[in-house]
Image 1 (cartoon, rainbow, N blue to C red):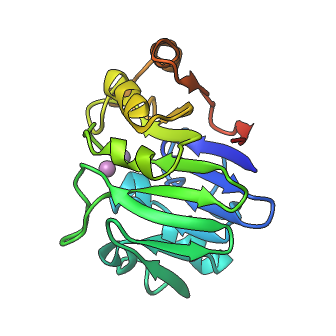
Image 2 (image 1 turned 30 degrees about the vertical axis):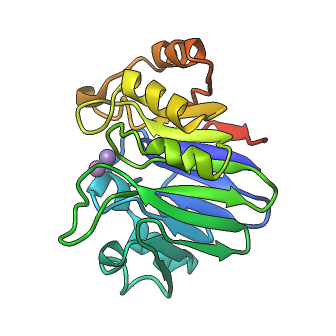
Length: 223
Ligand code: NI
Ligand code: MN
């Protein structure tokens, strides 16, 4: 199973059978490692409707036929383009061929009236569990996500300003009991400039292994 970082908050998890694309903001993203008309996927998971997450979801869904997973209000923004959708809401989950997706809370604005921002816990059939927090503040109930399943990888924003910064992201990783952390949502613009190696050192100090990926880099996921 392979994780590829495409820049900002966009990444792909390829199980070998299915490709899951998260928050596909590629057009207008100076750090994007792939273009919206090249990326391949079977599922698109959207954490919320801010432009740096919803991004190119509609044209990608239209071209690839990928199913879109999001809260109903966000799905409403892509419904003309997406032929398959899976509406979820906080606390709910669905079992799909690659594993189980649970929508988990995030503390952030949604970017669409009536919507909420969310994160995802994905329990892959092969036993690897990934927690993607979406844009969020640190909150103590993140511990409940780690109680539900052992977290092998936490994918967390570290940019500060719009989301939690590096110190809170380390605490988030620690709260969920994550074995490893992958930092995202930084250095796309000067306002979210961060030193990921400094974050990695803080995480390692807290007992969490950090994987810093440059846009375009991949990582083989394991338990
Ligand atoms: Ni946002
Ligand atoms: Mn964002």
